[in-house]
Image (cartoon, rainbow, N blue to C red):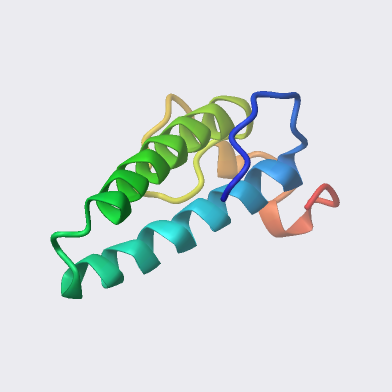
Length: 89
């Protein structure tokens, strides 16, 4: 099960958890395509989707948008250094 404890997380830890939640959500959705009556899997999918949303919102408030699909008040990727040039990943 994914860890949902609130704590001071580094940027890398937050990104890792975001990826884990995203993976789990996709896998559960694929499972639910063939097992739509599995209430445990459906509840787990909802729980992970909520955690994913909460964590991505928290991440984006601090570090800016994860993708162009997430709006923000400022085009943070125009600031230096570029995301792939940062050493904190």
